[in-house]
Image (cartoon, rainbow, N blue to C red):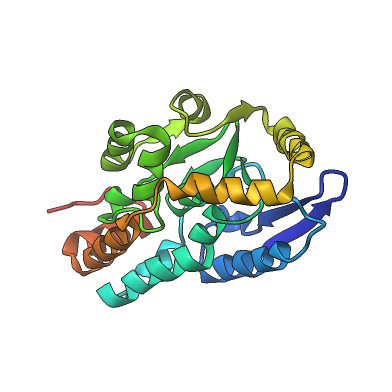
Length: 254
């Protein structure tokens, strides 16, 4: 489910999510594989940074695998949200080494939440970003309601989440959602250039800086998000939203 290689010159691990026919959608296997690989990297001193991307030029990660959600109860949905944060999303946010997302196409739903978890975001000029969960009768469940406002501000985050709209790379850069926008062919090169800059810093200082920066956002919002995410799985509108998505039609919400 993932490809892995190392760039020795930049001392960087490069992880690619490899489900191109599903537009690299997240499922439990991908989340587990990413988590396990990060555990290995954490204990590999020769690796100073990490780049996460998706295979191909269409999608970084085009959301979660909606098919997995169809029969979830509230309790199972809450557990999905909480375990995903512990296993992967918050692990990335609090990772002791810098993590860069190379957003090479669609970054939607859980895909954008994955990018939001990384410390630096670089997008190709063709990238599209959004949190469309409300159009499925849901809300973002992997810290999207927490991290997006922290990054772009409450007003813009409200608009993106409540309208479920998708924005292009230039707009994402304008509002501070991504750090840089480059052409697709230059995406990895740009990420590696940033990784090289880490060589002039102390690994211990980077770890402390990440921890210190993250400390200004500590609150109970993640737990509220997980509870609200799970409760929506019992609603008729969620079932309608998922069915409409799978049937490729517009939902008819009550």
